[in-house]
Length: 461
Ligand code: AMP
Ligand code: ZN
Image (cartoon, rainbow, N blue to C red; front, side):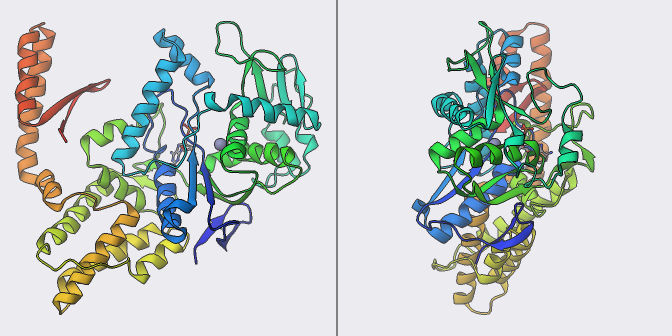
């Protein structure tokens, strides 16, 4: 039995889908205006584990997982204006990069990846229904949700009306009847992206897009909705208000799940601290599985302290696991499922730290079981368990070659020297020499990648 902590009931509950032949899960996805940081990677990795677990439990074809792409947003408009390009070129670029980065972290593509631009008609339709039923009103080109029309507002986040009031902005926009009312639609000027609607040309607010895409792609009531803990209020509170009111009071989400925040070396990750780690940079410097292992080393609801040491330790653990696989490659191939103690850890609210401990225990048995059959079975259990975590997906010989520490050290130093030489050549505008260095490395299977923070290198796959 899968047990999951439910923010809605504030308890660890037995998970039961409404329809085991169509289990529905939604996770708020990225706003594609820039690179994702490592904190942003926590929800996709955490819910990827749940996705794998649900598929194992209910069958691959019986789980529908939607993770949206927010491709209309003021931050996107700002990024486009700064670069002097239209928003599509920003959103296409960062959608592509997001998918590539997630793939390198071993995140399976979700079943559905709806975009806001592709859902504009259902968004407008939902807003119209909310206005018609008295839950929203149009004012000065804006449409606002009326929180007073929904007595349960604040229940998900556990906020009292006083707290909600205190939380609302000090400066209240003149078109709001109640300071807590939030925007469903806002007007666009001629030079801003906009869509025609009964309320004039404009674009949707952030909250309503999720409600509309969920209704269209998954249904009025869904089994699981996830995201980071910071989204509980106001984003998810507002999703509940919109969806429940649009559906005549029907339950919107059965299980609400939220991951805790990630810190860097015990500090809050922020631009002002200058400690923001981008997934795009990390995947060039470290194997994706090591990043993923580090992410899984804390329980998803706990804060995760991302440190160099933890990442180093994850790499070492993976080296050991791959070495176990390599050393045992002569064992007969048998089939086995993941063993019970491992599964029990994951089925207990995705306890990945315990699951990793079990994984290492299984690896120990690959060596210590007294019989060949026992060792072969343990090896099969190791692979089946690792698959549920999205780990040990490479051929051991490839991993070990990549991870041979001394070789990497020497090679790394040489490549760094060549990168410097190339940078010097470029500075003195000797592009022929710069290109020659690049080509030389390329012929050895090493690719240079020029990024905002300088040049990095990676092995060509
Ligand atoms: P944002 O780009 O801020 O809207 O965040 C996208 C997703 O990443 C949301 O689900 C956030 O809850 C999540 N998120 C942002 N920062 C962190 C962090 N430091 N740790 C964990 N999750 C985060
Ligand atoms: Zn959302």
